[in-house]
Image 1 (tube, rainbow, N blue to C red):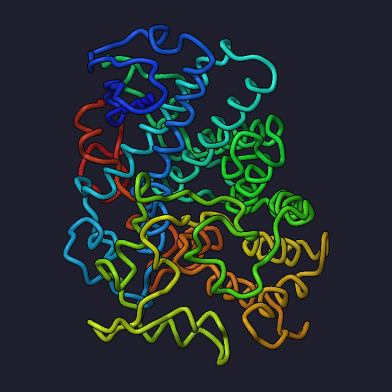
Image 2 (image 1 turned 180 degrees about the vertical axis):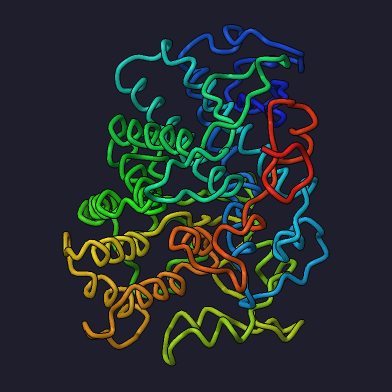
Length: 456
């Protein structure tokens, strides 16, 4: 069997079709290719969409580096990166350059995935009925997810109530099939990119079923709501964030695991996983295991400064362990290399989002903020908070400790306009540079402040 895969080299673009699954076609790399030669029937289109799942699970994307990049940029004494890889070390130290290999791989692989999705969307006329809705919904939902990661990393933070016309990232919504001037896309505004993200996610929400009929771990309408809750929270749209999180909670399709430890390192998705990337010895990469686990590189040392943030008796502490070879603490969230899933969105996050949004709004839609926070605390054997103890700082601390090392901290800091150590939320070094290879190839791209390249 062969599977169609489309690879796009940044935005100065070549299209490659490489051997993979379902045996539809093998084509050598060309400067350009007629998309009609590829998308000849419904099975072609479906196979391309399967290729997008493979691409988004790459180690530089949801296989780990989307999460690690956010946590590395947010690091302020909680952990040290002690590995020898230069790219990750630059990001952790907030000294990344525009030719950093790690961030360049994340950029390129993200746009590769977007091109696969755009190719699938270009073949919708070959589909009918439920298949057409499913493919369109899945492709748009995943595209919205990828653009959401890109805009949060490579552009200045969204600021609620402002015009947000600062440069975002290039918006590419049709397949790129050849190298030429039309491939030199400029950066859309932050606001325009967010509007496209919301449009894509809403289409996914409306087109998809609550449970995907093709594969249980493929994206569905509830995943669209969970991602929308993140997007609206990032934009300070608390009512919308609360309502999307509440929709997921009240669906009764998910439930918290009885213990915190049972959420991670499992051979398959748990009842708490809203969305997780599938990982096996044959396919997928778990970069989180590679860099966190003592059984692999063990490059991330957890410091006492972070441990001191937990209350005594917090069972989340039990997931930390001492590396027998190095004598340092490691996080135990990512200790299985294969045949497991990489948690991307969990039900616990929905409760925390609903709690924060309701608290800010002074409302209790779905439940009170206090009850939602205490639900999370009860699972890790902590005493409930009293009403007098509940404020935004307490909610954000609970969110940080529950979701630590899952890629949320940087984005929470930025949306609440807080600091990373002595750096302000809008410090230019908390934004990644546009990669050098794309600036060199695309004269219409401009660079973020403080980095080399033509400034916007």
